[in-house]
Length: 588
Image (cartoon, rainbow, N blue to C red):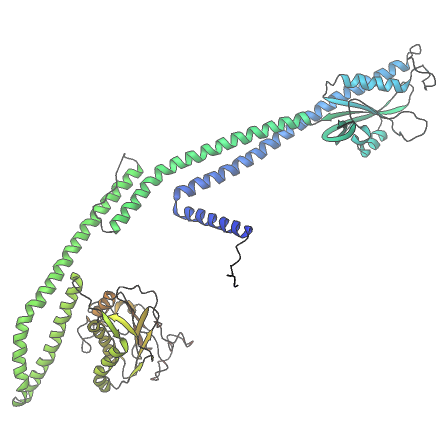
């Protein structure tokens, strides 16, 4: 049994990456398309940045203020406790009759005071005034010395051995009578579960000083101040700033959206009206409200649209009159031209009976009448294109046959000019749905122009077919085209040298009609050329009538152009070799 192979499904990271890319793409598209989105997004980002910076500065200032106040308060409270402990020790030491009851065997001072009990009572007394703000601990300078009998004593659940840094203890022992301060981690004993101890740490401040007990021994007294209240205050400040910042950012974004909407809405309206004007709806106008800058913009836009409409209507009327004039003149000249043609034919047939001068005049009259008739035919054809009356009679045609007929008809002219017509056609048919009469006219115009402007060099006609298009390229090696002339050659009555008389070629409308014929087929007619390097004209057509032409099977610039051969376009002239040629179009 065969099982169908399935392509592996994309993994979760791949799908997530695709979604992220899609989201980023949509955001970038919206960014490029909407001014309002850009303004609102920029306002949001800048507002968040400002609020974060402001929050950092404010929190830093508040933290520094709370820390300074805490240090000052700690120094003041600890100094008071140190003075009280010193006063009590001095009072007991100077009062011999005062004593404290202690258990039998407990070491006592000479005045009868038990120092351990006295330290316990001192720690309890000093911490009771703190009301939970601070804790007190008494530590012997060296608890590891045998026989001292004084371990650390502390209020609350503070673990003094771990809460007082060793460095601070050494500094306090080295400088008796001087209160020293240091930041620390206060370690506390807690109860967790059934009697199991769990120690906690919290940031705090410790102030210590080495003092003397009633019997003259040294001990270290420490005050522990927790940063818990300050951290709560700082947390409240942070939450307040965050809440206020969120509301302020949202307010700024809403204001930016509202303001930009008031500005962007008229701009969008102007864009829509401009698109409608471009589509030919010249009566569209903007709605003007108020007298502000945007209202003046709308008024100016409407005035511009009205002037543009008037100018376009005038140009349309002028173009209509011109087309009507050309059409009327062409038709009106048909009748007298026919009469003149009949008379000229009679004279031309009887020219052998005339004297040489009269015979030459009859021949010139016949030639000029031929040119006049061609000009009238071209004018009538142009008038049909201008009036939109041109009709395409498409049928499947092999372009190789059309090219072959055109070449056969142009060979006598090529022989007189000393040129050779070379056809490069594929073995397979190049069939396309075209109007054979129009394409024949286009190809005949291109080939005849190439022969007339080829200066006796070879003319190469290339044929190629693709999946959706066919193309014919006519290459000559004559005078070529100057920069910018490749688009001018299709203008009506255009000449490369306006001062030069039209002694060669046709009426000056051939390439204009050829371009219209190509457009009627949905194709392209393009020219390429370089000075002294010849020219090439390329006709590209879709294979099916009404099809879309995407690319041409033939390149516009030939392979033997100076650029493709790595030569300077302004270099030496080309040789007459067919294989050393260049781009399209000459002064047609």
